[in-house]
Amino acid sequence: MASSWAGLRRLVWRLVREGSVSRVGLPEASFGRRCAYGRAGKGSRGRQSFAFTLGGTFGLYQALRFYLRSQGHSAECEASKLPDGVPQLTLYQYKTCPFCSKVRVFLDYHDLPYEIVEVNPVMRREIKFSIYRKVPILIAHAEENLQLNDSSVIISVMKTYLLSRRKNLEEIASYYPSMKSRNEKGKEVIEYNNKYWLMLDEQETKCAYGTKESRAEEMKWRRWADDWLVHLISPNVYRTPREALASFDYIVHEGKFGGVEGFFAKYVGAMAMFFVSKMLKRRHNLQDDVRQDLYKAANDWVAAIGKKRPFLGGEQPNLADLAVFGVLRVMEDLEAFDDLMSHSKLQPWYIKMRKVMQEAPALHRALQQLH
Image 1 (spheres, one colour):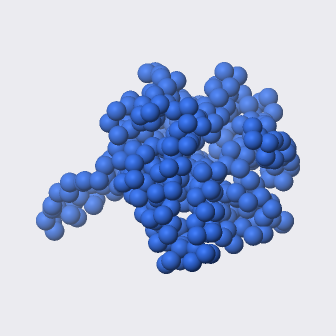
Image 2 (cartoon, rainbow, N blue to C red):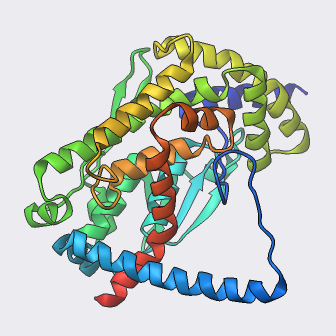
């Protein structure tokens, strides 16, 4: 019993400190919890299957055609430099952590294959090999294994690898040195001051961004996702005891918990995080109704995109689009997510992101075949 309580205390503290805070899930048909399904006879099913196959093929063709036309030399720059053999990748994660979700979104969008190791958030035996004790951790298996820490560093290193002439991951990773500093409480922390930069030469930068303003904008909103948006998740998903219990129900279901450990995590942990969420609300100076801060953040993001482009990156998502989507995705199927879709201007962008995430892997494979 004592060990269960000690483990629970470690879990709650880790959830506060690292952001493993909420539920993740991707409903197939619509937002919310209810879907309507039609019925078809046996004869119509075959025709529908053929129609869906034909429609999907035609849709991919049109998406590829539009992508090449709209991106021009940018698409060719990126596609021509995709490496022939990306190292085998292993992602150590908590599935419900927004920072881990960011990395999965990036890897999935770029059609980079990877294996997942789910880490027990209490004991963390799966990452006992690492001095760095947070997740996500990405291991690139090459001649020598390379460990990448911090979600934004992982994304910047891998994106540089995809775009740059330099195909040595170890060399690219060396451009992101860790620095020890002390936070406002005097605790020693590890920082990566240049983690939002892509390490590209002048030609590669022009190819990837077009303008300096586009690069600066992407970096600004990637930082915003880490420094502000992610801190709105816990106060919203643990806002009430009922919401806290719903969140922990999924955390326990998806995490690597034993029976007794899972019971304590679900019921005691949910209540603990309900009170912790109030502390986080004060720490980040949120309004009494924390939903209002979430709605405002979503509307600020939509305003930054504007009405003349579907994504911050233009016709296709950039790293900021992927980061914001990754952070928000962990709330899907929770009351906070439903409220966000209903009371902000975010839903059209979010639907477009879901669609492009479904189409992107096939699109990237088609682009590589063209080159």
